[in-house]
Image 1 (cartoon, one colour):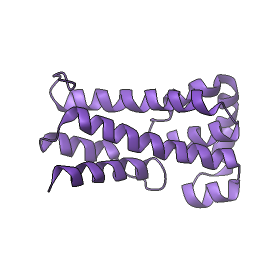
Image 2 (cartoon, one colour; image 1 turned 60 degrees about the horizontal axis):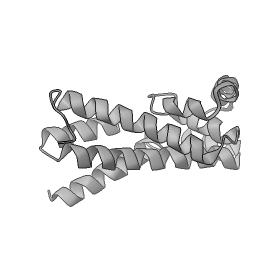
Image 3 (tube, helix red, strand yellow; image 1 turned 90 degrees about the vertical axis):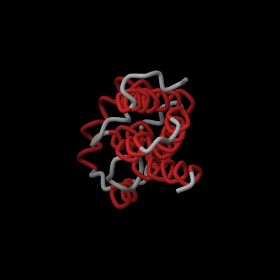
Image 4 (cartoon, one colour; image 1 turned 135 degrees about the vertical axis):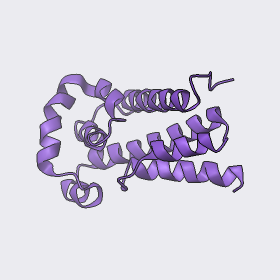
Length: 148
């Protein structure tokens, strides 16, 4: 497979795993790193795709249509309500946790529903996503500097 297609596949997998599909972008990234893809580019591509996917989820929350959220993201109103109070308490800073499996999508939706400031929320989500992929890539690459 040509590297460009691999990076495109990583971007798509990372984007979709942050929105509609319940699968692991971490597995795709790990497989690519093991196959010899460049770690820095791989981390940047995975981060960009996953961040944009989460920002899409945030936007769905911002629009505030709970029926669409339940249908498209399979997040119940009860689950949203569970995280709503935390979102109000921590605001955009809660975006640092959007990378968490199982609850990250709910947090992104709640941030949108709470209408947290878009720019700050985007930065917090980006930081959380990037740190997760940097740690994963460092572990998969045996602890070596992935930015060299």
